[in-house]
Amino acid sequence: MRKSKPGPKSKVTAALVRRVSNRVAKGIPIRLALALTGELVTLHAYERQLRRHPKLRAIQARAKLKFLEKAIDAICSQPSPMLRWYLERRFAHVFCPLEEDEKFEAEAELDRDPETQNLAEVPEK
Image (cartoon, rainbow, N blue to C red; front, side, top):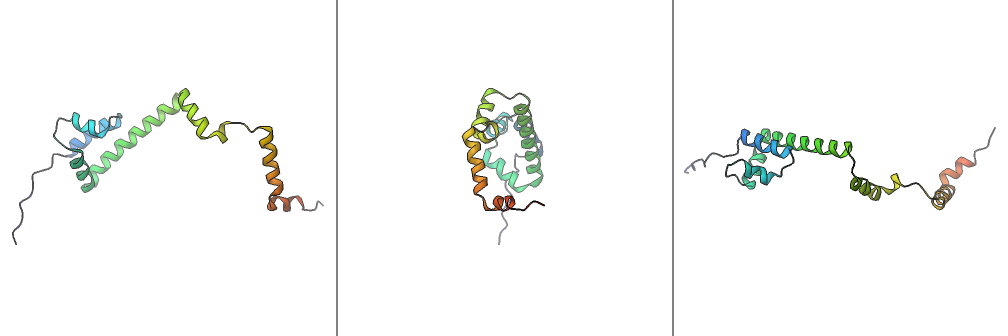
């Protein structure tokens, strides 16, 4: 059986992954970060190399985490009106106070719960 010749060396090196990862950490999408390197590397080839080499994957993962950390810090440090609007609608139960009718319904629900009724029937000494 004839051995096949090894293919061409990959253009995806640790240095390239670091350059792309630094751009990803700044918030630039991977496709654009790859295009800015000047190397003719496709996204498919880049991702294939990341799957094959855990060290390269670790470099990319650190860059993604760095970006997420910066994004979360920015959101938390200067909450914008749009973020507040989103949070108030998404988590309304946390931000909106209960109306009187809702308080009454919540208390009535506790009264109907058999476990809380048993607590009320404990004789006092």
